[in-house]
Image (tube, rainbow, N blue to C red; front, side):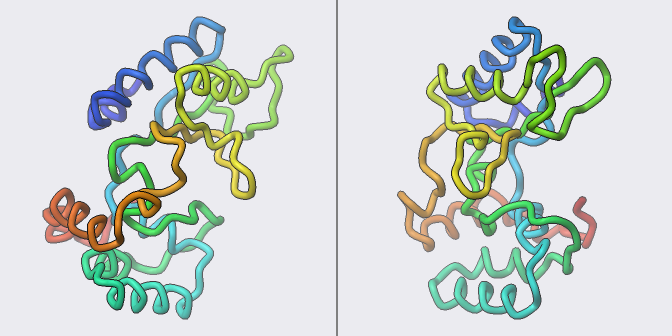
Length: 190
């Protein structure tokens, strides 16, 4: 398992994530971590997918007006993105930026299974992943209404940091944690 994806998670979640992967393995399902801590520039790139220039400009303006200039800057710095819708969360509003979320892909031998509806030998790896996450008190995107994300688990059963922190507090924390990355951003992300 790529340990680098687990190593930057906060300790409480890293322990639970390790137990989750072990329990899945004990049930015959290998889940490979693909992304843990995600910086706000990557989050901006994911968010910008499937959004037009007017939506992006409106979000940047709204962030600046709300006293979140660092988050606005993250959105501004990332070039336009193409691809399918990836997230509803702008930078700072995903638990990935807090080290409290992990994405994993189900592996069938050496083959990644990205489709959450696939059965192999009457087993759905994402279903087992979700069940075991629930048993550990984790929130799994498989069970979300609306935009489901079967690969995603997070420590808190709270949809967004904005539920418990002000946008200004989120902006300050993201700047403290990630300013150095923005200063060294070379235009290459994904």
